[in-house]
Image (cartoon, rainbow, N blue to C red; front, top):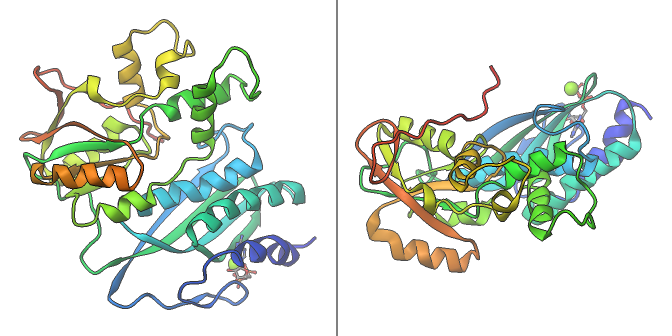
Length: 328
Ligand code: ADP
Ligand code: MG
């Protein structure tokens, strides 16, 4: 199978599963032709995934396909954007069609879930690397950003924190048997969420007009909240014991003999959770509660935006230093 046959057999097939919103011309020409929705702004983002850095080498093709799109969709969710289109630049070590099929099936799962459509890309040979570029739309002026948090706003987080940390630990320790007696259900959930993170798209859309700032947690709660604070020129006061922690972190001995507080700090500093961290004026607490019910997601108030530039623990002056993942 040559490059063009690969594109035809796999990537074009994947494209045909998208919703095709505004797609005048998709894969096959030199460029795609796309019609943006009226009265909207386009929101774009790119993320590259490298084997051994963004996923363990042992990760299945299906999960790599799923995750490559999921992490990009998570960025759209953080902006309150609706997913429209994506491109895929993939570098493959060989023409392993079984691997490519698994990869496309993983992506297809999210394509079917969200309607986002593959509209182009590039296929090359070399060490495995995947770059996805997503485009979404928001009504003009309605995007959620990192720079809108104000002193006095409440700080919230969606879902639970620490699935990423627990899942990575489990993946690296070779755990993959669902009937492994050493582990209970929460570990399977953590591994599943680590391999197939669910972008909080519905929540992001619903937060438009409610949240003053928003970010997705890819590098760790503390590191990502710091980005919001830096952009908003403010500080935050957190109650560490309020951070909703994944059961997998609480019950796990994968992290050695650590106290609950140490585990909590570890989870807040670990990446790959893909939850949303956002700020909301106190006057909108009821809206947030209603949203949690409507979206069937746990939304937890973990602290407040305060004057300053750092994250401190409420009631004390202990500075919470982020140790988020950095490539360089
Ligand atoms: P060109 O040489 O003009 O850049 P290519 O041969 O790279 O064109 O690609 C042919 C068509 O297939 C283009 O429309 C391109 O967007 C699409 N394409 C190539 N690789 C992928 C991929 N991995 N996923 C989706 N579309 C792809
Ligand atoms: Mg090309």
